[in-house]
Image (cartoon, rainbow, N blue to C red; front, side, top):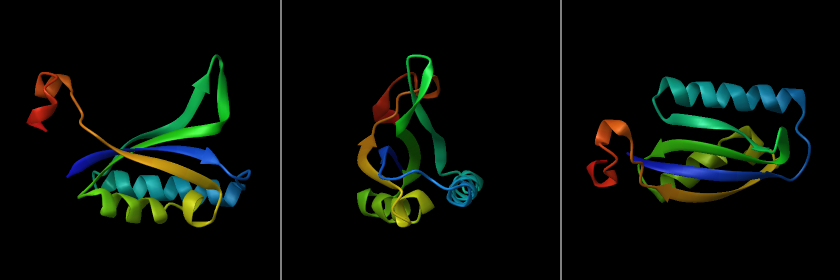
Length: 100
């Protein structure tokens, strides 16, 4: 599986119900080993109410877009996203992204 990062931006304010659905979506992906990290971007000392980040695993770019389309924030029209594949370098790979 490949790593992807989605930079998200708000189109409208999320309801409590949609936030709960989004968290359930992330938890389900975590159980499958696909979710790597997620959260709002912080600007200075404040949470940026306009942007977020989500890193996850998928087979390819098409599968990554399909996965993003199932996130309630996206499917219900609360967020837009920009998606990129990421070559991850970690201490476990001796910071060699080719080992991925």
